[in-house]
Length: 277
Image (cartoon, rainbow, N blue to C red):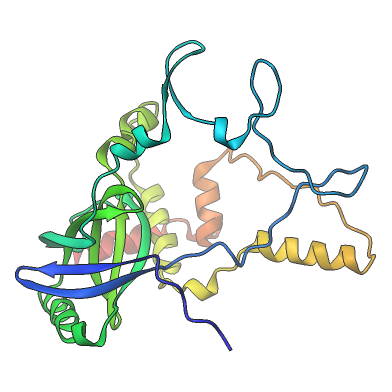
């Protein structure tokens, strides 16, 4: 018998003068992943982490650990726990809907963590369904804000099945500019048969996303490794082969598209005919 998930947060969803009690549940989890502990090879005992003074090397008790902001090399401003707690924003436990936007209006680079948002009380289900159906009919999502886990957070709320998905959004200062990442990418114009072959490969591999079709190969391999170890089987150490460097991009495209030597112009000609039509 599976246990019901535990709500990560409970509060209210406010839509104009309409308010309904809601709960947030984590939509993703890493608890099912295989995890390892760090072990002392000599004794077989687990290794315990410990905070030590960077200068003396001596352990520091929890009650002696405080927050520090570095203002210079090895120079810190010290903050006591109650001083840090004083700046934590107050919470009214309410998701305040600020605006409604199109599904694709927000770049998903701002997406942080998804939560399932559900009614937490039978008495508020009608109001919850009203909000969900209203957004579904208008094909919009909602921008909301609230204090979540001691921080003011902005969330994108959108209809999902019988409930809502609330995704926390990264702040603008947390998202790095793409300019630096892409500044060394050359401005190359691709045209002719090369782009036709690329479009042909994309067309032949068109499909739909099915999350169940994608396996975590590392997780499966680790599970098999543990099983082999427990059964006393010999562990096969695999040497990874690096993919060969592409020397002739055009030839690689032709092979990927399955274009033989005597049919090299087929894809290009077909593409031109589609454009003409």
